[in-house]
Every structure is written in structure tokens, then in C-alpha cells.
Length: 226
Image (tube, rainbow, N blue to C red):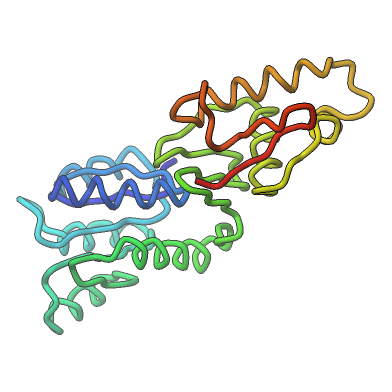
């Protein structure tokens, strides 16, 4: 299940908003028309609907009405139609919030977080660790780099989280190994080196010249926010 269905026919705006939302840890599916939104919702569940009004064919008001007739998904309308009557119409059809365009991506993200918290009581800002282009979702144990999901195994995730929670601090190899694998583990210390190498291959622009995970020779590793 995706967190958000974004219905926006302006491709550039849709891509921008999707990138911001995914950077904050939300999963997003985007469609450009009301018809595609309705078809998607027939087969899939989402937590929030972000809806433009001025869509080709089936407009946003019609989508809002159809969605509200079938369920109580939170609906946030985004529209250049900012007249009082338009807003009253949107709220009358069951919208939970109404944002005027141009939309500020940071404000939109904040409103989505608030809707999530109010409706589901699960996601709060503290559930995420955001560092540069990386977002770590502590709830789902997922990591995103520039809005794209990064596939990590369990130990890679735990190692990255531990490093990222201590930016600028050199963590000794022994400390990292004991925290991730445990003092009683039969794994060899070389395991840490291998996992650092794998992490760098997934989160660094150039793994051979890492900027996030720095080696402190003879001591351990230090995570730098970039």
C-alpha cells in the first residue's frame, strides 16, 4: 500500500512534489488524470489523496466526490482556483484541507505529516532521520536517497542508522561491531569492513571517494552530513 496518491497533470510539478514527499520518507504513486486516479483506487489502498482540481476530463471535484462516497481517505486539495466558492465546494465535498497554488513543497510535506498523525497516529517527524539527501524511516526501516528507495539488508540498515545518529563523531570499530553483531557474535571483524563497503556502494556518489562514511585510520568510522 502506498502512503500517498498524487493526482496532478503538470508533470514537472508532480515530479517535484513526489521527490519532496519521498525524501521525507513517504511512498508516492502519481497519476495525471482523475480517471486514472479512480481506476487506481479501485485496485489499491492509499493513506492520503493529494488532488489537483483543474484536471483534463474528470476534474478534481468529481474525484473528491467519488472517493468520499466510498470511504474516508484524507483528501488534500491543491489548486490555483482560490476563490471562496471553490474552497467551500471542496470542503463541502469532503476535503480535509485546501492549499492554494503555487504549492510550497515544505508546507505540503508538513500538512501531510499532520494529516498522517491526526488520522493514523503513526508517523511523526521524529520517526525520520534526514541527513543531506538521505532519509531514514525508523518505523518502516527503509532508507531513501534523493527520494529513491535504497535496498539494505538488516545489518546494513542498523549500521547506517547508528552512524547517522552520531554525525561528526568517530565510532571505534570495536564499538560498532559490538553494537551491531554483539560481543558474543562469531562473526569476524572483517564483517564490519565488508558492510561499510556495501553501504558506501549504495549511498555514496563515488564509493571510492566517500563523503558520508569517512574512515578514521586505525580507529573506526565517522559519519558526515553533506
